[in-house]
Each structure stands twice: as C-alpha cells, then as structure tokens.
Amino acid sequence: MRIAKQYSAYILFIIFVLLGSNVHGQTNEQKALETRREQLQKEIEDINRLLFAEKKQKGTVLDQMEVLDQKINVRQQLIRVTNQQANLLNRQINANIRNISKLREDLDALKEEYATMIQKSYQNRSQQSRLMFLLSSENFFQAFKRLQYMKQYTQFRKEQGEDIVKKTEELIQLNNDLTNQRKEKEVLLAQNLKAKGLLLNEIKAQKDLLKSIRQNESNYASAIKKKKQEARKIDQQIERLIRSAIAASNKKAGKSVTSNKFVLTPEATLVANNFSANKGKLIWPVEKGIKQQGFGIYKDAVYPGIKHQSNGVIIATDEGATARAVFEGEVIAILAVPGGNKGVQIKHGNFISTYYNLSNLYVKKGDKVSLKEELGEIYTNRYNGLTQLKFYLYEDATRLNPEEWIYRL
Image 1 (cartoon, rainbow, N blue to C red):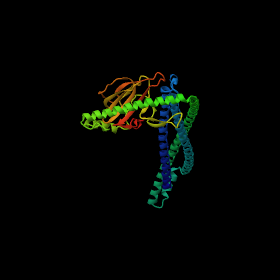
Image 2 (cartoon, rainbow, N blue to C red):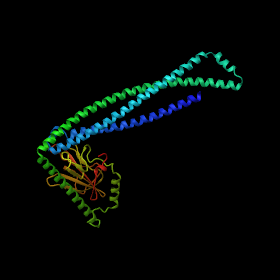
Image 3 (spheres, rainbow, N blue to C red):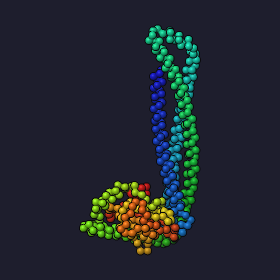
Image 4 (cartoon, one colour):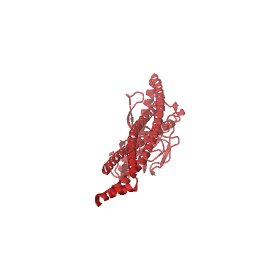
C-alpha cells in the first residue's frame, strides 16, 4: 500500500510541475505583452504631445494626414496587443478553473482517506491493542515487520494531514489568483473598449480630412511635390559632402580620390570596428522622442499608389531639444541647404552619421566629438509647431538603415 501511495504522490507531483512550468511560461508571455502595451501607450502619448497638440493643427494637410495615419496605426497595434493579453488571461483563467476542480477532487479524496485512517486508528487506539498486535506475531521477524508497519502507518497518517493542509492552501491561492485574473481581464476589456472608441473617432477624422483633400487635390499634390524637392536637396548635399570627404581623406593619404570608400588609418579602422560592433545598440540621436518616419519606400497616406522614398529617419522631439552624437568621431562637414536649415556630419572610421534640421550649431568642422556630445539645437517649425531631427547613416558612400543600428528605433 505504501509503494502505491508513493507512486500516486509522484505522479501528482509531476503533473503539478508540468502545470507550474506552463503557468510560468504564460506569466512570462503576459509580462512581455504588458511591456509592449506600455510602450504603445507611451508612443500614443508622445504622438499627442509632439505631433498632435492643438497648436500643431495649423500644419499642412499632408502633415496632418501623416500624423493621423501614424496615430491610427499605433492605436490598432495597441488594440491587438490588449486583445492578445485578454485572450492569454482567458486561457489562464480556464486552466485555473480546471486546476481548482482537480485540486478539490484530490482534497476530497485525501480527506476521506484520512478520515478512514483516523477511524481505524481510533478503533485500535489502546496501547494494549498495539501490544497484542506485536505479541501475536509468530516469530521475531514478523514482530519486527509489524513494528515497522506501525511506524510507517503513523508517519503516513502525519504526511496525509500535512498534504491536506498544503492542498487547502494551494486551493485558497488558486482561488485568489482566479479572482485577480478576472479583475485584470475586466480592466483590459474596458481599456480596449475605450481604445476602440478613440480609434473610431480618429478614423472619422481621417475620413473627413481625406474628403477635404480630395476636394482640393492640387494643394495636396503641391505639398507632396514641395516635400520631395526639399528631401532631394538634403539627400544630394549629404551625398556630395560624403564624396568630397572621401576624396579629401584619400588624397591626404596619397590614395585614389575617385574611390567611393575611405582609406582608413589603423586608428580609424579601430573606430570603424567599434562602431560596427555596436550595430543595433547605438543611442538615439536625441535624448527623448519618437520615430515619425522610418527608412525606405513607404506608401502615401492618401493615395497608396504614390510611393515616397526616405533615405534616413525623422524623429520628433520636444521644442528646445538638441541633437547628440550617437558615437565618438570627427565633424567632417557642416550642411547648409539653401532655403533650409543646418546640419552636421560626423565621421566614425568609415561610417558617417548626419544630423539635419538644426537651428543653432555647437560644433564646427574638424572638432572631435564624444558619445552623447550635443551638436546643436533642433529647429522648431513655427508654422506647424513640429520639432524634427532628420538623421542619416552611411558606410562610405552607401546608405544604411538607421533603424537597424539605433537601439529600438
């Protein structure tokens, strides 16, 4: 009987270990989802603060459309993540209900078995009965075995009592967890309902704006054309200055000036290797902000058939914010786009980071800069109220995607 009980206890232990590891995995998944949800909520707050304040509604319809499109996209992500959290909680609640039911069955069985043992023990409670049980043995070996059995029986009864206490505590804890999970799910569902309401309002605002745009398409087309021309001017000057810097550096080293790559000194090679080793871990070029526009080709917010090209990223930040160096290096050029603002180019071995749309510069060509060093104040557009840094990254004359290099950009 003892062996059978030990085997049953072992099986139950394995089942609870497996259930426990599954709950632990779900808890980690829930934590990851909660972290992501908090990030999206923070991003929406930043969009409202940096891009969507009342004073900034006087920007062009293109500005308004792009910002609204970004906000709707983030809101949809938030709703999806919250749904995932609610679904995961629902699975945990169902698993908890099953565990509670199983635990109650086990507890009832334990109590019944324990009651039977107590009853039998009561019937044979006298010291004389135990003594007669031993004395009636046929030989010393049988008496010894009966004594051992009595000790084991007493120990088993004690363990059964402890198991009942332990399982009762587990049951109380599971019931508490179930109550908390249901409350948490109710909160998530309420937050999601609110988010869906806000999303519907934003979609309606987008439709109204879209309607006004299509009533005067020429203004929208003009805004797109102007934006592309400004971007092209910046891109052309950035790449011209990079080619000029490569030629000047290689000429100084006595190498070909027609090459599209820097000839590196041992010191510059070390800087380049350190820069490359930090891919995906570089700091943001601003202390606080959000990515407003990513790298690469993207669809127009109004006419998806129209494609736009972004050779860098645009980061929105607070008024008065400064651009900062993402890595140590040397200032190799100062940008000054006709009709535009200023910019700084920093060389990190054969990598070049560019910070454009600055109103005031704190550095000059030839300066050595350190990590996080302030380069200049970012320009705030008085027409639309936006403070935007345009950040570009190159390896020699080859464009790189900053989102792959800057941490969580």
